[in-house]
Length: 557
Image 1 (cartoon, rainbow, N blue to C red):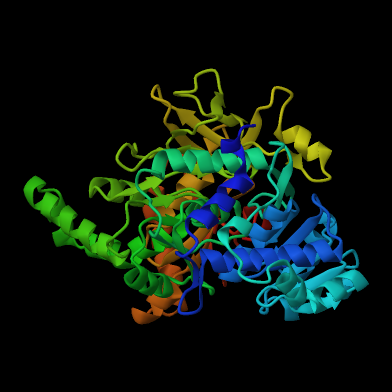
Image 2: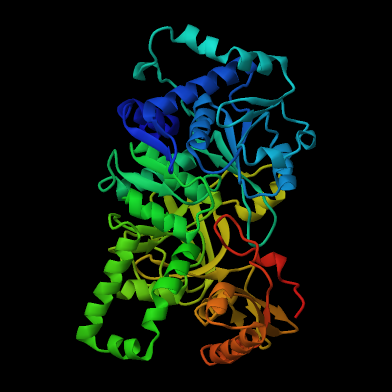
């Protein structure tokens, strides 16, 4: 592996090159410049060293997105340890289980998460350290206690005058297959698995991003981190690439509601936006679709000249709503609603839909927005191959298989799951179904585990039915399930909008029955719903905001 493939060397060089630039900002809070991040990294390295941490040891990290989280993550990798990022949205028992399963020696934890945890449930840990100021919350090691008590002295003795760019030297990732990150999934179809991400996968993802965005994104440009950093999508494309490009990253530090996101967009005016479909779909459904569904607007949209003017107006309003300064919005992490995809495509909006998986750290396919094909999620990225397990990949749906530098080493302590996911020829079986056209554009049709069989053996993709149902009145989100060969939908209604419009429970139920009838006119006979059950609360979701379908498969109708 040559110097250009040294992932750690990439962020080491960026720190030196951008020493006095703004690096990480907690929105409406503190800003760290690149040299501030370097000091935080160096202090953690001294703490790790004097506590006896060895390269290859695992360090868990659990907290909300913030500058301290990002600094700690770089410190872990720069030391040669293995980062174990844990979603702060996980319940305490899940955090305990992941810490124990990962064999982490230390846990760095945010102040909001720490009160919910029980150190006694994590007996393997040698210590728990507060993310913000490295306060020692729990120590089971004399060396760790001594290291923390003397940390400032160690730093002063090592750097008696000034801490300068030439002092920034991290442990190079010389082995491409060395483990960098142990990332626990939170899937839609099963429980968490520990994904073993090697340095080559991180480097390959950065190489791809630099190829497609390096001519657009420059040092000093801005991005807002909306997605959880503990998930590969947010980690790779709202932190790692931007930091290595000398950009300025803003962390919302709290739950990213649409109102908070829009306020931040207006103030920061980011140069790139990374999002999951749910955020975009909510904004479009609330702000755009109601204006387009009036009878007069439907007539106007059918007129070519006026239609173009309307489309331009909608496009401008949307562009300004997202800050008015971005090159493109990259949407990924889950299936994108096809009706909204078609709308954005029609108005010429600068968005694109990509495809990835935690197991590929995460990127698999992508196209620049100017080349994006409607309904597609792009073409295979550099250092990767893709094929459809089908006799006719252009017309007959098959499982999506990928192979190359981005693919994980396997699942931690789970050889059976690894063997099921990666075949002897190195192909990773994604579990997703799709088609690919003659130009190499990928079209996803659902997950193989989600596919249902109709009474006559027809393949039914519940996601396609849900897409249509989600556009109907007062449907906030839904899941389609199968009972005795009949299809039903669980619907969590948009109660906020219903209250505004004066609907009581009986009226909501009547509207859902009307929705069922309207939907059945849109789908094939074997895809029609036999009933709708109103669900009383939001569905539990993964970090990518995909509904955890397996939790609802046996719901009573």
